[in-house]
Image (tube, rainbow, N blue to C red):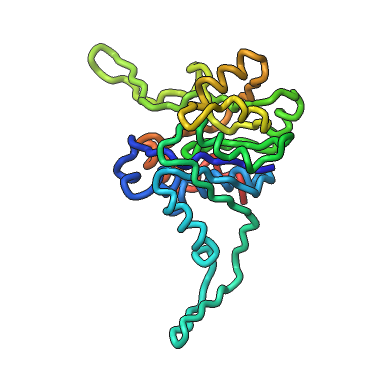
Length: 257
């Protein structure tokens, strides 16, 4: 099974980082967000990826073109310029880097990938900016068991603000807002049948509007409720928080060895 990762958006709320690179290439612990997401999938047995490129897609292409050399020790013979890779790390992923347009919406990007799937194929998909300790194999089993065309992973909204308890004018307690009681939101990590791509009209189609709404109305959209960790990276504060989690060795989304 393949996994599609949408990696073409502008990421305007992270302008400090995304002025020179696409959002999925913002680094957490020295590795791009995209690398973290791919490892989540690989831990569940998904090792073929389709990266939907757009804004600064050349940065992602350069990363994967140089991935093998950068991930291993190398020897450079300066007398003739030859390079020898010292085989240490071998990542058994296949990565398709596909231009899906600079201004395409989320649905439009999916639509531009139709030709990569067989008529009866099922694939996974997610956004390039969300991390979760999701069990990909369990998600896949859930989808296969219900037999509908689409599954969306839902999660509790992450805490964005601290909670304050007062005694008069004095702050008696300050805690992180708990990630409970906030309802459920779209966390990405979809499982989709190739047929759902027929609901996409053109590049302007927003996946979260017409296609998902139509799937819900027709009873073809099921929700996989993820009770664990999920955190999007929308702001610099969230980027710093994720980086600190990784550096402390307490990154819940690290489900791989």
